[in-house]
Length: 196
Image (cartoon, rainbow, N blue to C red; front, side):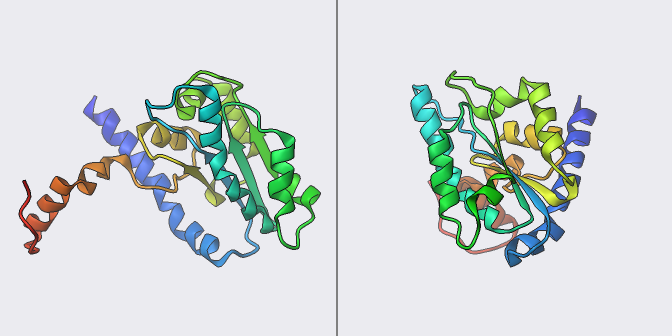
C-alpha cells in the first residue's frame, strides 16, 4: 500500500514540474496556447443548499478574463449550468476581444448534480465526464487545473486529468499551521516566539 502511495506522489510531483515552463507563459500573458481547467470545488460543511453552492462555484468567473489571450482555452466546471446571460456579461468585459470569439474558446461543463457535495467528488465519480474534460485539453503540457481548494480530491482530479494543479500539494498543509511553522523554525535554528 505504501508503494502505491509513493508512486502516486511521484506521479503528482512529475505533473507539478510541468508548471515551471508554463508559469513563464502565464506571467507574461502572451500568445502561447494554453488550457485552463477551472474547478471551483468547495469542501465546506457549512454550505446547506445547491443555490449557495452554485454561488460559490460562480465566484471564479473572473477567470473568463483570461480569454483575452487569443490562444487561451478555458474549461469551466460547475455543478449546475451557468445562465448564458451571466457568461455573456463576463465575456462583454473583455477589452478588445469580440465576445463571440472568446466564447468559441470557452467550454462549460456540468455534471448537473444539485447535491451539496464537493464538485471534485462529483467529477471523480464520473469517469466519462473526466474523459470529456481531457478531450477538450489540446496539449496536457500546456494546461493546468485551477481549483478553489487544494485537497486530496483536487490532487486526484489533477492526476486523472493528467495536468498539474495550480496550488499547494495538500501534503504540505501541516507546515502551514503554527505548530508546523515552529517545527520548521526549530529544525532550521530560526528564532521564533514560543507557542502554547
